[in-house]
Length: 305
Image (tube, rainbow, N blue to C red; front, side, top):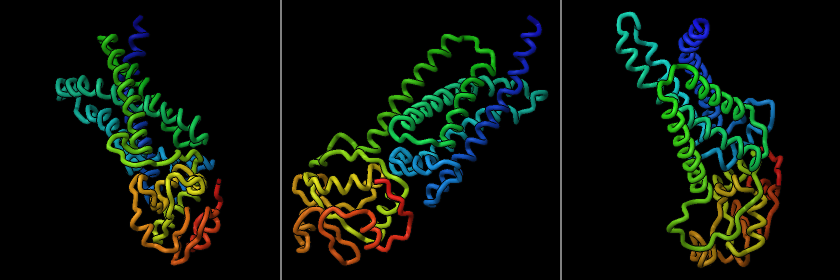
């Protein structure tokens, strides 16, 4: 019994530094991915899935890189775990104990939320993206380890209350995550006016996203209508992730964000889709290679679709 108590005290001593070390590594990794994403570069990764994940529709939340939120979460865990250790236990024992008692529940709640969120991302990785991402797997592992350390790293007096907090935090995180992605990817379901047409189902690769961004930058336009099957085919070629960067002009009167007047002011638009690229008009569905050549695109051309 005495030996077991001694082992537990050992766990209590190194649990906070361990959480702080893991959170530090996680913060550095997510900070690196945030910089890579903002610069439009490829991440150092032995598998292709890393870049696929970074350019997917799930990599941004309301236009902000998801990795930035991850970095902030890791920094918060690092601060909560290491802050009490900065107080000298010999001279300020009461103050340190008070800070430890305050931060442990916050560490548990934070670790629980991060673990559930990472679990949902693993679900998306396996079912939607179907890609391998070492950074994602490492981050998910970090959250599980931090969660276990918050449970085993101290003596919890009321374990029932701990379970209750964990369940509530897990449910709140899951519901908030699903709702957040639903709004971020599909747009708000309220106050929507007009028809959007069928949903794009193909996923995008790095090349599709880069081409869509390039077309937007050079001022290209795709004139189309939500009911047009060839317009849908064109969107499918770009894929879900690249679609939000496409310079699409809705010409149908009852379409979402309709710009019918603009479409009618261009006499060359006699059918849908019609592309306007560098002053030239290209009628009909265009291959991505054709659009790349017409726009002077110099990026990757290993298009998936």
